[in-house]
Image (cartoon, rainbow, N blue to C red; front, side, top):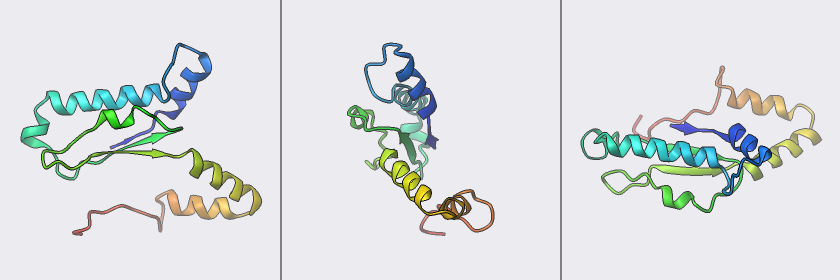
Amino acid sequence: VVIMMTEIDTQEKESGGGAIVDNPATIRTILALRNVIYSNGWASDTFNSALRVVAHLDQGCKFFNSMDIIAPDGRQCLYGQDMSLAVNTLLFYCAGKPGLSRVIIGLLNFEGQAFRCRPSWQ
């Protein structure tokens, strides 16, 4: 499961709608998913052992560690990716090296040859 609520996070921050925490929409989405998983008995009966939840964060979040999603075997299932440094670095590299953006898009767009994730047993 990939969670990317960065546009709504940015809108809430810019509107000044009382957002006192960073990444408010991302936090709400993770907590809603966590509620669905644990309130429907997934945690004990039909929990998928390959479940991974990756949250795209626009900036660091000091509350992220309090929103754990833990598998019955004790494995952490929630991973946060603070993409601000990576995105900024890529933007500056692409601005300085013409053609680099086409190479990166070619690798990440899942058309033809691309990076893909598979379980290690396959």
